[in-house]
Length: 259
Image (cartoon, rainbow, N blue to C red; front, side, top):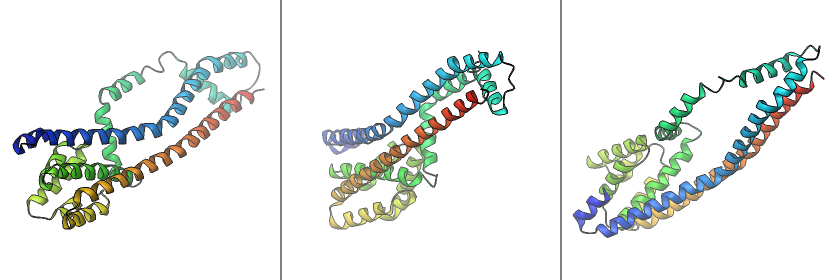
């Protein structure tokens, strides 16, 4: 789309530079997410590997030890050892293979559906909306700065945005804009955008500093999203450690009760 606009306007180089800058900024935002979630993910994966090792190699030794004792196991210990037998069955992991293949095969579609669901979720809607609003503001600002008109910029974003649900909402705004509705009102067709987007469009349009205001808004929202992700990651790691402690406590209680 940017190439077509650049060819028609005779400013292909400027359009490509704007597109490259957009991709770089989006990559930076994704990198912030990955950086914030790395710690909790490493903690969770390490514990899962450790837990699998305990269940596969340690608990069966206790199971064979207790099976030789004339001891009546408690319901808690019996349930734990029954679960160990099930997990160590050779066919236990077989049903998970098709599920893993399905997740890997349709990972992009699942990711898109998950993000679309977050736009409807009352707890995640605000954060997801800010992320998309930051991307929208930055994209419109850079395209407008390179000489692309606002309707054309909105058309570019409506045809290239992710996820599809967000692209459809932008197309609704574009349709309203083509019917003569002002852009400040048409953008309200995207329900999860913060109201500040419409306000900045109105102020920027009246002052002639639309690109500056939208870039400042995008930067603010990116920092706000980054702070929210870091805060969530700071909460997730202690929660993961607490869950690890609970699971290990359950295992040790089940092992020590027969003694």
